[in-house]
Amino acid sequence: MTDITLSPENSLRHGESLFRVRQLQDNVEARPAPSRIAEPARLNPLPSKAYFFWLMAPAIILLACISIYPFFWMIYMSLHEVDIGSATWNNFENFTKLFTDTRYLKGWALLFQYSLMCLALQIGIGVFLAVVLNGARFEKVLVTALLMPMMMAPIVAGLVWYFLYNGTFGWYHWLFQSLGLLDAKSILASPNTAMLGIVLVDVWQWTPLITLITLAGLKRVPQDQLEANMVDGASPLRNFFSVTLPNLYPVLLIAVMLRFMDNFRFIDSALVLTGGGPGNATKILPIYLFEVSFKFFKLGRGAAIALTLLVVTIILGMILVKVFDRQQTRKI
Image (cartoon, rainbow, N blue to C red; front, side, top):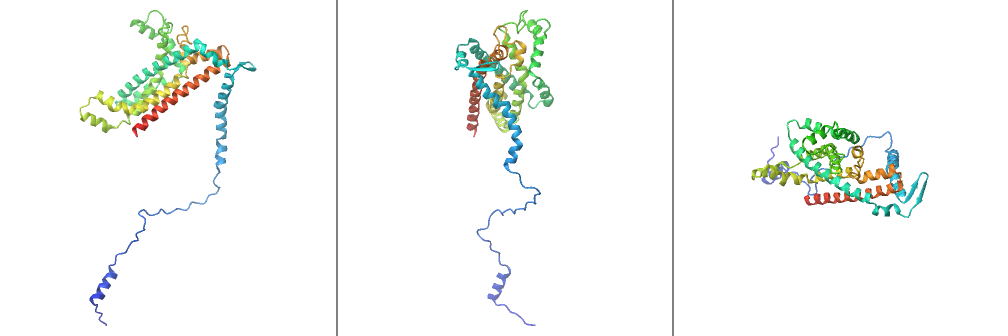
């Protein structure tokens, strides 16, 4: 048996070989590259983009027939004197006569009055109900019950309130008369109160929508800001105006936009309740448009009125969208 003696130099080298640390390269990636999993073989080749287009083609054609074609046909009618089976160019008379039509101009004024009254009451009552319901014990049950008027068709809601306003057996008429707010006439029979009557119907039916949107916004209010203000000694009312309301601003702006566009379009309940009367006290522009087009069959004039109503609605909607975008930019 041979005895191997290691010199200090050999032992040092031998120790280095046993305990040598593995050196890493400097260019090694910090995150390992993911390994690609081979895709399984397909029985059929991937469909092309044209395939998906042809799948959507029936829906596109249907939407075009419902919206695009009537839009251009409305523009065509607004430039012509339309009669049964014929259309005659009238040199923009349908538009020029609108500026001298007192009922058209009054219809705009009544429409803005109606919309502002509805929005003011709906926003005020809707926000109040949302704050009361937020975190309540029976919140889900109460919200479900509150949404029931919104599920009713507008023409049915108009009929219900028409009987409630009836001067002979209407329960609301009896209540208002007992409180001294009305005389023997119905609320819909007086030019001074008829507008308020149709506004109350719209408020009753669509305030739950504002409440639902506001309630969803309240769930997203930062609780740390509320708690910090409470620690600083802020009252609940001050907390609401300084923290809650600024966070609800974008949500309320969306709700205002939705209800503003609906007030410019829906006339079901107003037609059932007053039909624009008494006199012309509630003849907002959509009701006047309905009368011109479908009662007197002046389709060209009605198309011109509808086109101006559409243009004003788009312009006001764009203004609301810009206000919303500006508010979002400030937050960022």
